[in-house]
Image (cartoon, rainbow, N blue to C red; front, side, top):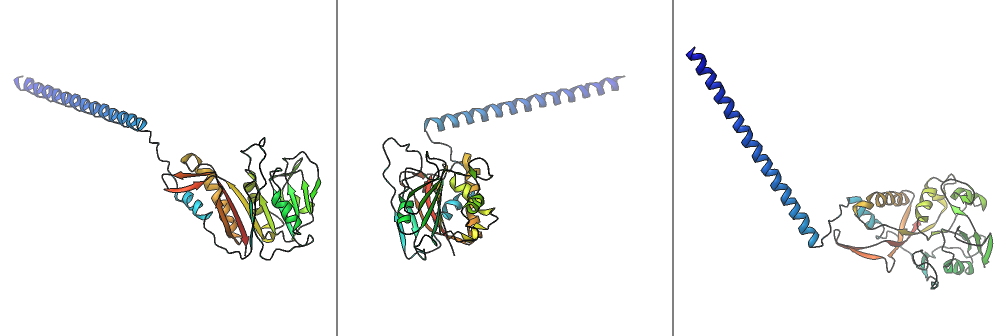
Length: 287
């Protein structure tokens, strides 16, 4: 009986020690969690008061995008830059146009029956480039829905089509192949293709790479006014998608012959430690 009581006492003592140990460990864990939470709160408060924004995470491919669109890989011996027309005071300043346009004149024909230019997503208030090239002998086709005009001849060799470039055909919507078919330019060389307003560059590239007429083999020069969002982690998907489309140009034999950030749209990116822009004029030639 005495041995049984001693055994029970030892078991109870062990149980008490385990319970005490559990309580101590629990208190230590709660204290540590409270301290960590307090430290994090102090850190956030400090960051807020010093006005230092959280640096965005940028994938390597995004920085590669800016390298890709600013590093020329082709040469031009006879370049021409046509300045944009004056912007009217009442015109919406957020709409692209009036930036000026670069074209490489190397090998460009100067007769309307041979020199063909497409201008998509045009700002109707700025067609100085189109008028200049029309007067030089190229036949210029303007495709834009941003106009009050119907089909019209706007000047020497310059023709307006009130249509919208789209991925699928519809009322007023034409794919690139629809437009090529309308003008009976199937398999013929198109010497210069241009986009201006926001979104036009993406539509053109998607149409180009899916063209049943293999327009990627017949377009000689492509001018893209690129519209890029700020290089932040929120915009990674859009930037990477654009990068993949532009790399497609290289796959089909195009090389960057001209690139410039548009004045007034530059900013300093503190993470990449370089000056970037939300608008770039880029011109690609097929060699």
